[in-house]
Image 1 (cartoon, one colour):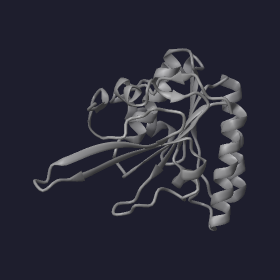
Image 2 (cartoon, rainbow, N blue to C red):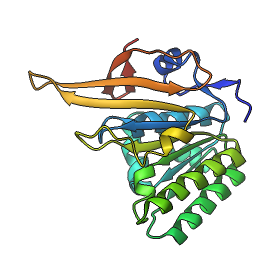
Image 3 (cartoon, helix red, strand yellow):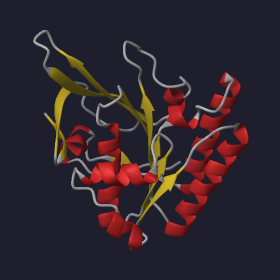
Length: 226
């Protein structure tokens, strides 16, 4: 996998922290607590790419297609005209068995091929693996997903949730196959004020920020302090 060209994350501050953006064709693991803003950041990545003639596919495993489109519109991300113009596809997917995993991956591949998509978001790895019982099945799923990403050449954000009071990221194998890892965390301080912070813990081939950066969420999306 040749990675040299950079593409914007859709967030100017994050682009700065990543020395210009994500490496093209890379797989980024976006991990964080529930409600940390992972979907907002990922939706902006697809939206801004589509506006720059880089079609994108958003694969929803955690919520319905209708709910996602409605929720992100509050942050100025209007997918509907881009869907009509065949610049964006939002897939409504759910997993109940290993057979359905392959079916979901086939749907993602077909949408990427039809749109000639350059960007992909999988939301989320945990929801995608929910119907799988064994660690072997879950690891196999991650490998299949990674192969799909390599085959299509899409720059991909794979979302995974970190449960409260846990240090574990997803199903563990994602950390090893991912080209980059971004952690988004939030917690209440001693005065019961919600504080959010972002860290880039891994990004191959990138002179990225090693600091912890505070951020807020507004109607414009994520505002990250440099």
